Length: 367
Image (cartoon, rainbow, N blue to C red; front, top):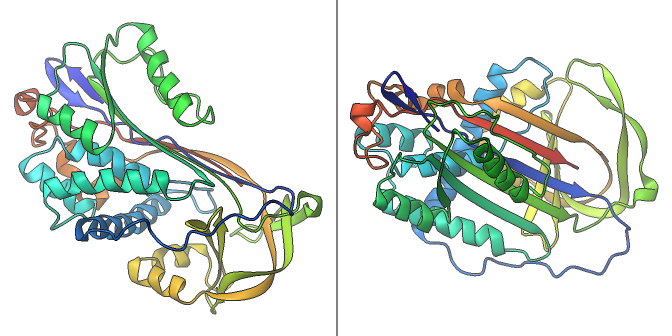
């Protein structure tokens, strides 16, 4: 978003709105065709973007966990943050562009290839598996009279399929319209992300919404769901319903530090990978150990294994201000009104002091 402060414009970005949903269902559904391969080979730029997204995801998660109280429940979407910040990156120039690109782990990718690859990723994820529902929405809402550069508008419309619209932010209906888009994009699971009245200093909101809903490939029978004790990291327990399944093979591995299982959705193009830390290692040490190399080793170590699987049913809504997280990852200049350069977004950005003032993610998961 952007704000006007005593004649100086300030940018305020809201990045987020995410839903991941999965559920149990009768255990004898019609078989789902398995997705054996991608519909086409990925370009080098697309491979680079996916690799960068994975590296950013672990950086992002580690910083968020570091800033939370021990034992807090966390659910975030690095992909959603990356896309919202990607739309902002499209408006950045000079050192601001370089710093944001580096923080997003996109070093070495030219501007044009970054945009093209985001568009390809949106198309790929949205159409990869027709048996699950994946919807990715982007939008830019700007204050009427705050004119965005035509090339910037064309770029976010092309590369992010973004809805770009100017609104009278002094009208209470503006927040209703933005929140209505959020509700529609998340199937009603997230009701609002903009709180009216909109601050008179706000110039724009950049919002990403990702909605995922899928049935397990091998489905849990709801008749087998029963209460169980979930052990927290501090050693205490909570009574929660557990879904159970036996006599099925799943990709699985076990080490002295963790157990890992992969639970695929639909045609198996998407999966939930669950890591259970050992009592000796603990969850904090496990999170700190995660990076692209460690993750590749975890995935490579999975082997089809017949298991008795118990997974807790749960839902979680999580909201987080990301300013400090992103600054710690190297984006400080983008938040500095004296140094940020978003002149590809607005020609007078440097004179206005245009910068990011707030980044927020709001996420919901139900399993």
